[in-house]
Length: 69
Image (cartoon, rainbow, N blue to C red; front, side, top):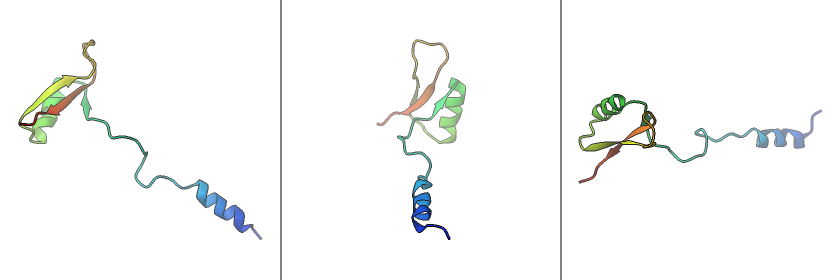
């Protein structure tokens, strides 16, 4: 017969987060400006600007920032 202590310990150690990893949400990023513009148009964002997250590099992460009026 098995030990009830062992069974309870196994269930406690195998618990996982309910909805994936527990970390802060990151902004949506793109490799090209064209992809960023296409995504903004598909989401119907009218007033936005495109920002390079690594300004010193030619290629890098590009994100769409919505401007508030």
